[in-house]
Length: 262
Image (cartoon, rainbow, N blue to C red):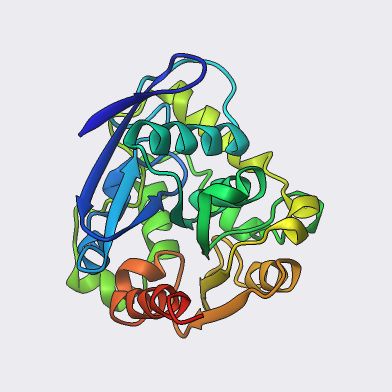
């Protein structure tokens, strides 16, 4: 682990593994780099993987001030600068996909390709989860909320065989104020107007049965970003990249490998 410094002085913990062309892996809301622990090695035989702890998570600083997905994108650039990386592939899932949209829109010269997983354009054009999902996550009992979140992430069959611990349900050491800041940042995301200007080759990936971030957002993104490809993972919920890693990871690697032959 190393630390970079953002433009506003916030310390950003980041981690590097593998070898080859750099591939940034961006986690979901209120999660640290541990989000990727289950699948990171799928990419490290072909790429040098870079993760970071968002401000408010993991070993990064945790200022109690407004966060934004666009601000997180600037933090990604600060990490790349610290590592001396001019250009990288960027793979973001869930809120990380929202952050990745801004990385590609604001810093096109830094993005070799873009993979957007289980994410949304946000704003008025994004398709929101329905009320039943919201109610399941707003219960007073924390254990009930965790169970509901796990069922949104994974199929019952997978959960029966994988009792945990799970790295996709939030950073357990994260302060409450930072969780709320992350939630607000993700909820305020709206990149609809800049999506047509994204020039990086793009792959959109989504679980077909995702209702946490509805799968209908995937074709919206693919249609909005010029030349983007769409890959749906049949039967997968929100954490498609982990439960269905034997399908999803090779699809991402094939996409990245195909860029070399253009």
